[in-house]
Amino acid sequence: MEKITVIVTLYNRLEYARNMILALLNQTKMIDELIFADDGSKDDVKDVIGDLIDRCPFTIKKTYQADLNFRAARSRNNGAREASGDFLIFLDQDVIFSNDFIEKIYNARQKKKMLCGRAIFISKEQKNSI
Image (cartoon, rainbow, N blue to C red; front, side, top):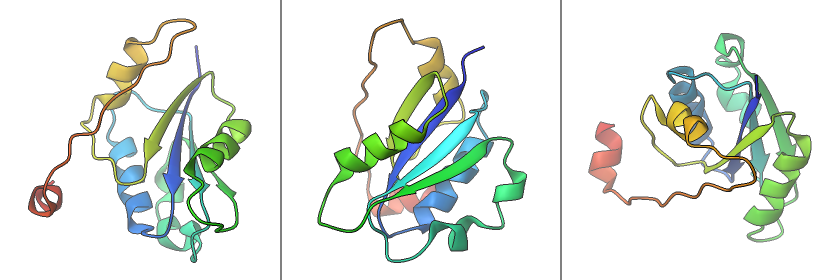
């Protein structure tokens, strides 16, 4: 069985890390590993998610690089180097997704292919209601 790793770029606004964990806990297909690829946040993500770690059936890791302006691609690469999964899913920290998102992405996989998605932008009111 392939292991699934989710790599989430992170920069400040660490409350999104909490939301990400809560969304992943409600998935119809569970991941094996979550990596927060931190691009130089001022605070430590563990201070924000510490109470959730024991609830997670998946491993949580963090990579960190100093804040030298926007380097999201390098941050994602740092996360990929730490990943132990066979199937990597890259997400931004503020993504909102359905409970079957991981299952759908995983079931759509093909060898030697990359799947890409496109964000749908919603209003702050819509985001807050979700």
